[in-house]
Length: 127
Image (cartoon, rainbow, N blue to C red):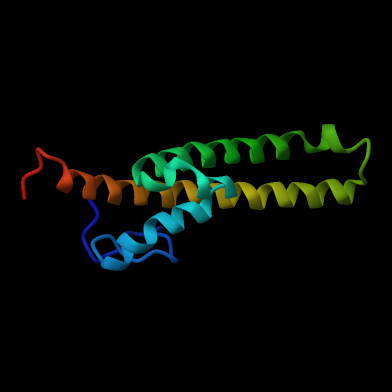
């Protein structure tokens, strides 16, 4: 469980701690910033738990794509690019993969925070 007002290691720098009014105000905009632009007009923008779940799958797909692109770069790109260009492309794929890995970790923490809030607001929750 994440303590109110405290951030665990790996918490998104742009997001206030759980339990603060800023967290409640900023969590959905922060989540929307992590995904494709069409999320802003999606019904998911009104359902933070569903939005974070979608984004967890989105980040998983992005990480898998970055890993595959990196692994296949020499085979797929060597016919058209120089060795230096392939290496540059691999660096880009590696950076994208690192970003998706970081995003996965951040989303897991935000999901835990949202689940904590949802538990407090559910009909069977005891305070």
